[in-house]
Length: 344
Ligand code: KG4
Ligand code: ZN
Image (cartoon, rainbow, N blue to C red; front, side, top):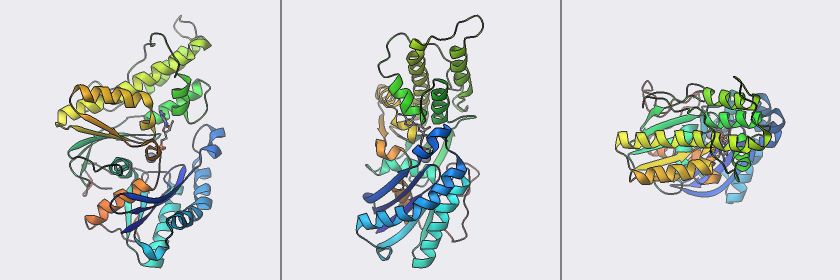
């Protein structure tokens, strides 16, 4: 079966054709980063207008690249939450229209379920597992007992790690998006890391918090309490220390949860999963406890529609089909205890 998927939750306009179970036949990802860069972050209204312009051509292009038409498609999948409301409406309206027009079934997918399934596109996920999704908007760690059953174990009480990277990059006068900028800026850095507060909560059930480390970077740059401002030639060291503390906190909590839940496999996705320091730290910490870490490939860490297609197939195989009056939502329901079905 061929699946057409649409992703428009934030600042990537994407469409893909996947052949079940996991062969990517074609995909198109239009990054809107160049349009948002001068604002230092994503502007929701600009994003919705760009999705409106870019989505229909992206769908046509992906069908053309696959050498097929809508008649060959067996399922339409679309990310319907969480995200920016304008972009979600554009994507979901197009998916509903295509479903209505062609009579093909529609499946609405939680974007975070999609991020986890980016790992499943490479090789089938081993259950039970722990999955960490870290992006510009999310900092969630899940326990998964099957492709359909997820339990949210950890989240953030303020910023997401990618958001913290973006804000700290701004303080360091580095370009948006902050993650790759900080990674490159601190690449050749040597010297003892500077001390910064950890975003890791004391208890295993506590939420991450990134406000302390952001404020500490700000105070280091300004100088405070009798301490002079960090000299410019030490800014790369400050960036490296920030990256190290954030990566260390995420890797440590994922490993603690692996041990607490008796899992041997860890899956990591989302934009921040591109971070090299996070990848190396996580690999060595998981190896120490006899577990294995699996990161989504770089091209599938950032938002894309292939991961939405894979999650859509899993839902559809379980008999889930979305009604045409299904709604969009700004928050994820994946793994929340209150959700009737663990899939949002
Ligand atoms: O998953 P994504 O493309 O979009 C969201 O759903 O948010 O993630 C974008 C975020 C940005 O905050 C960006 O700074 C961060 O991922 N990011 C990184 C790296 N590459 C992207 N953070 C740390 N290190 C990186 N190499
Ligand atoms: Zn995302």
